[in-house]
Image 1 (cartoon, helix red, strand yellow):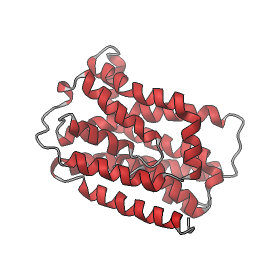
Image 2: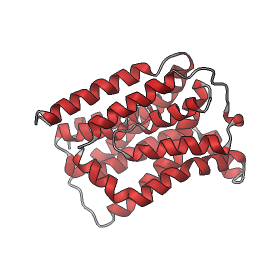
Image 3: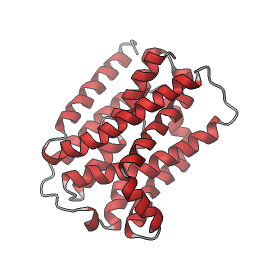
Length: 258
C-alpha cells in the first residue's frame, strides 16, 4: 500500500464512519479495488483508531463529564445502548468475520441500509432530546447498532434510524448516534488488538499512520457536518446512494466481475 492509497482509504473511512452509508462496506470495496485484502486487519485497526480519536475530540466535554460522573444517567444510557452490540460481537464474532472476508452479502446489506434510512426518514414529530431518553429508547437504538456487525449495514445509519423511530428529533438522533459510537469503536479496536498479537504486515508504519491521520481529520469533519445536515435535510439522499451502490455490487457479483 502506497501513500496515495492510504490517504484515500483514510478519507473513505473517516467520512463513511459517520455518514450513514457503511464504513466497513466501503472500506472492503476500497481495499479490494487496490488489492489490499491481505492488509485488512492492520489497516482496519489503524483507520478505526483515527475515527475513535475524531469522536473523542468532538465529544471531549461529554466524555470528561462521564469520567467525573461515572454513575450519571448519561453513562448508564451509553452502557445500556452498548450491551446489544457487545453481545452480538462476542457471540457471533467468528461467523461475521468470515462474512466480512468474502463480501458475499454486502450488496444486499447496502440495500437494507437504504431501506432503514428511507423508512426512518418518513417518521414525523420527533421531539426528544438527550435528557428525554429512556433506557428502553437506548436499548432499542443499541439493538439496531448491533445489526452493523454485518459489514455493509451502516452503524450510524442504523442508530440514527432507530433514534428517529423512538421520536428523537433529527439533530439529537445524529448526536446520540455518534456519541454511542465511542464505546462501540473502542470495543472493536480492543477485539482487533487481540487478533493482531503475533501478526505481521507488509505495510509500513508511516503509511498506516497517514491513513489514521486522514481518517481522524475527515471523521471529525463528517460528525460536525452530519449533525448540521440532519437539522433540516432528509436521509433519503443517502438511501438512494446505498441502493444504487448495492445494485452495482450485486450486478458485479452476479456477472462475475467482482
